[in-house]
Length: 99
Image (cartoon, rainbow, N blue to C red):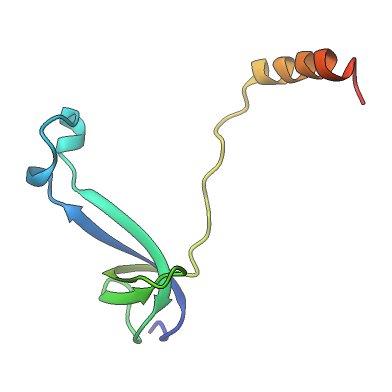
């Protein structure tokens, strides 16, 4: 059971695939337009239940409860060796060498 007031992540489909704009790419038309929102849970609930949250900006949103205390798990991808070389070149141009 997830307690009221916990910081959670919810998901809601905004548009079904059939409702997507005709100009979007074909692979995009095959999936719904989905919104993910974080907020404070407004009533005790279980993962997978439809819930209501209040966002940090004060909006009330509803959706399916996905997780509690969601974390950021994005990154900037794999290391690109060329960027290291470019960084060294820029440092040389801007600062006249290593600092």
